[in-house]
Length: 150
Image (cartoon, rainbow, N blue to C red; front, side, top):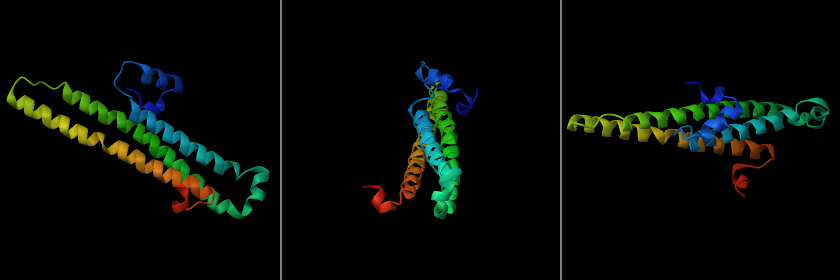
């Protein structure tokens, strides 16, 4: 199967709207995070070209570094988008495991538990990435971590 990041926008939206169990909310949230980070990179890019460059000359080094960070965050969100769906698919496969014998039931239960634990990693990573992106964006406004929350 194609990675979600390789799909055209309409393909991703159609897949999300289908009866397929994945992608779901986690992958959609990661895409939204990637879009937010991309917009932060865009804002940085707008201050490093043309006449704006002269107006913001004293901030160029900071803005260029911020643009690189935003681009990296975007890529990390895109990576999480696919890994979130992959983690869900592992759990789905575990639920399809046989459960006729006690051994099969034990193996199935262990696989489900392991898969569910793995499913918590990507949402947590997305929260961390979202925090990094918000802090980066706030820093472009001259806000610190303390003032970013207000």
